[in-house]
Amino acid sequence: MLHLKAEPLTAEVFAPFGDVIDARTADWFPINAGRTRRHHDLVKVETLGEGARTLISVFVSQPVEIPLELDFLERHPLGSQAFMPLHEERFVVVVAPPGDEIDPAEVRAFVTDGRQGVNYRAGTWHAIQSVLEREGEFLVVDRGGEGNNCDEYPLSIQVVL
Image (tube, rainbow, N blue to C red; front, top):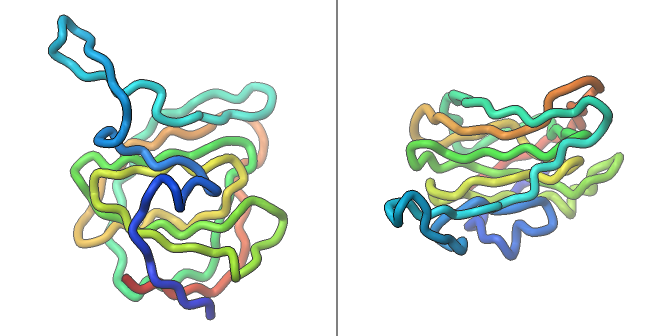
């Protein structure tokens, strides 16, 4: 079993896997007669393949227990997948670089601060949604359309905070 300690999520350490979504650190400009700050174009949404389209969904996830035990990671080879908490839910992020196989030495674990989201790049291996403390609602942006866009890779992982 691979044992990981989740580290704080930052844009710099997460860059090989995707983007951190955090309006607090993003540039913005005023809109709506100056009443709204637009934090514009925070991530690159990837939808690959013919007939691909962007989906916007809300996921409602039940909390996990720590240590978090996983028996696989998944990837979406045809598009990115973004998760943004709607009510400051903290969650655990487990990722590995794209490729046909996963090198256990390259698997990383992070914990968000509740206001951060993530955008996994197309093909990035990641764990299932793992919200902490309470049920969580997440705005999810990912790819719809034809083709198999979910692969699973068996791997035994235990994550602690």
